[in-house]
Length: 156
Image 1 (cartoon, rainbow, N blue to C red):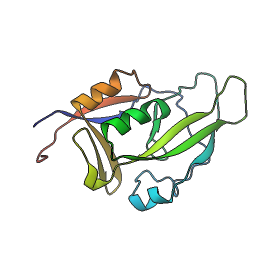
Image 2 (tube, rainbow, N blue to C red):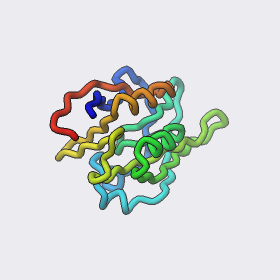
Image 3 (cartoon, one colour):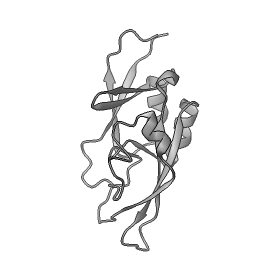
């Protein structure tokens, strides 16, 4: 069965997205291999609230993270996907700023399914979504992402 596939990318129009503070690239590498993922545990880190901050549903640095409201959708789209939680606390604390909950997803290469695929290359990680999966995400009006169509060949 053929389907269209789409690459999930950070929206270039973002001007002030949330940026985690205190998550090292060593512990949370952009290229998240299974070995690195297995070492993770629930982490509390920080973010610095500022006027005009965009509270994105997906973060791309230091590693790819899914916002709390999309984690269950990802689990439904790819039941074999595993997650590790990251909580971002506002620093300095303020009455307006709230803790933010994100999840680092890990999809084993062997478990790449019919709706979500994660392509890991030497210096790049690409999250691909079937048309149905991309539509499921877009129906929830996510902030901070867009989808780009991709050409795929040789996939069963």
